[in-house]
Length: 181
Image (cartoon, rainbow, N blue to C red; front, side):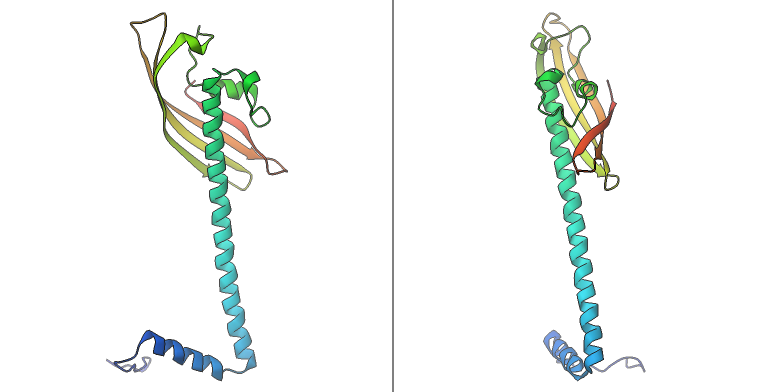
């Protein structure tokens, strides 16, 4: 059906023909028209490049914070919360570091008193809240027993949230920690 606003396209028209026709129309434009077309194309390219850069930057932050959170938690468990052995003292406080040790058991001062059967992260999800703040939510599962209590096992499904803030030097630091303590 041909209406007043439709154009008749020959049945053998190809996308290449359409592109060539567009270039012929562009060639026929005067100088001001060509400048407008060039400006619009440039604007679109800049917008798409800018969006790509922002998405890439956001992904880099998410990956960095995910890796840092995992490393700090794992180190805290490996050191059984001993802050003096931490290589992350510049980005996490002592109290938060100790709380990140999900193997902590009251009246157990040494990790060697634990027999760990299973310890794993079940999920880890970063969220960028703003350019200067983010949080990482993670869950873990641990199953262990105290060496002196052979008849009782401890199994825990735990969930935590680590709050991150970026300072003026764009260094991310742990600002808060919340979860099953």
